[in-house]
Length: 279
Image (cartoon, rainbow, N blue to C red; front, side):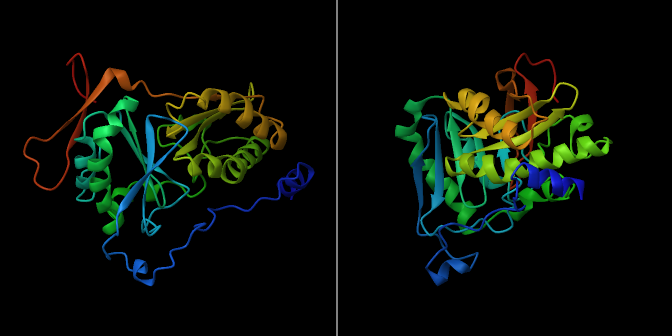
């Protein structure tokens, strides 16, 4: 009851869950998940180093939860599943830094804008497999995440996450934060090939920590967007939030290697570049 009152007082009459696909496929054949795609096209984003790839039929990646985007980078090892094998071709394209898999798109980020002249065609060909035969097993572990925290970053600090033991007031604040992210922040980021993930919230100083992924991760304007637009939206609906800051993974200190005897499954390991060991 108290949470409902807080929503009403702040004008936060928001529904939970993802919005339906804004452009449903008019082609009935696309309703079959194993039908061959007509092709994958690339779309520019506000980040010159990132492009958003989508199926020409607007095919939805079967089994993907729009509230739980999956991003693969050299700092996060690929799962050992047959579906993950499809990502091997993507990371073999020179210059690829990260791949964000959304509900009906995939955003690829490269290390330099000049890469696109040679990288776009092979990336589109490699990503076509995700739309023609969605690798559901990529999400096996992600689907085991607690339902209470659909937008919770898997790398977040548990002590400040949705599943931490907090008092009732802080729990309500966390619930409101997630509602604002789902309805006011993430749809805008996803439309541009990126996403914004909840990392943690510190009730002591009112600081909300978020992680930018996809096109948002290295976008020149992402810092200003976070500091002004996102902070203003959060401050309007959730007055307990006094500041919004971003969490970044230090990807420059790591490299990813694949099993030499690859036979259809990817075995990825994380190594410090100085060769001192593996994580």
